[in-house]
Each structure stands twice: as C-alpha cells, then as structure tokens.
Image (cartoon, rainbow, N blue to C red):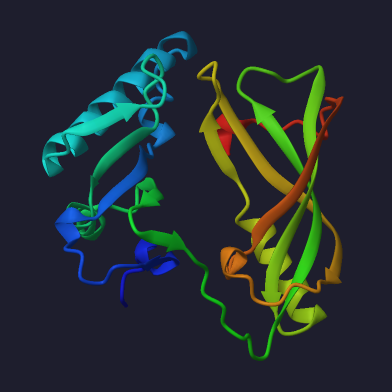
Length: 232
C-alpha cells in the first residue's frame, strides 16, 4: 500500500525550481505511550514526559540534520517548527514513523489545495453519543461528560448503526493530563443517527469516523457511573 504524502495537499508552482531551493516550514510533534509513565507517581510524570519530548525532538533534528528549528514553547517541549527545503522534507517524510504528528505550514511558491473525489455507494451519517471521563484517583464528586457528534461513512441507516456500535466498543482512550494524572474517556451510549448532507470533503474522509462537535458538562459521580481508568 502506497504511503500517503502530505505533499498531495499542495500545488507547486515554478516546476523548474529544484527541491533543494524550495523552502518548507513544518511542525513536528512526537507521540508517546502513556503506559511508559503510568508506573511513576503523578507528581513525577510531568518532568518525565517533558524530558521524553525534548530527547525525541532533539533525536529527530540530529538524525535528519535540521539546522533551523525552534520549540513552540521552550519550557514545555511538545511541538517543533522546522525550516528546511523540499528535498530534505521528502527524505524526512519517507522515514518518519506513524508515532508522530506532522503538518506543513508553508511551502515557497506553492499553495494548499484539497483533492475532491466523488463518493459512490455511501453517505456520511452523524452519530450523536454520550462520552464520560474517568480521572485517576477520583471516585466521587462530579463526573465530566460530553455530548459528541461523529461522522461515519455508511451505505444506509442500518450500516451506520452497526458502525456506530463498533465505534463505541473501540472508543476507550487514555492519556495523561497536564497534572500527569491518568485520564480515560469512552462512549457509554449511542443516542441518535441521522443522515448528513456532507458529500466527500477530503478532510473528513476517515472510514473510522471523525469527531465534528462536542459539548462537555459535569454530573454527580455515582457508583453506577464510576469507572476506574487504571483498570480498563
């Protein structure tokens, strides 16, 4: 399967301009596995996570020989803005792993475009669902929840409902918040399914569904509502 390139969303002008002369500015942010840090006390995780981002970013910069770069926040190492050329970016994109987020901010003599493809045999359905959150160490008090809307590609209503249930089963997501406390979120109910009028915008062309709207609120924690993020 051919690897997707971010360059497909850009239209290059001046075709005779060599790649090593065409400037590129892009953002890079490594991802991490929270499981590597969960065994440490909450108060120690912030420095450990910050150090991980810093070392991983510096490793990438050294590996590809990037000389012009800066951290978006020098005290909180998360996102690096890198200035390079198109030749170096192509080499970087070929070797970079999936465990990272990369986005192109600017390419000289180029403009951002979106491909448009006509869909056949499916439509987008909006799924309304309820999501609740679990915070490590909290069993009582108010529970954070949200009403979430997700777009799913489906052939008809029945197909949309089936895919919504699959989305629910796979919805558990865990991460460390700014306090380095383990947080988990998951879908607890599918509340409604309706056909949308969205026809093939490239940015939402995701077979697994794309979140398009959410509204968070708090409710009282009860034994029935509580779930332990550390044991899921």
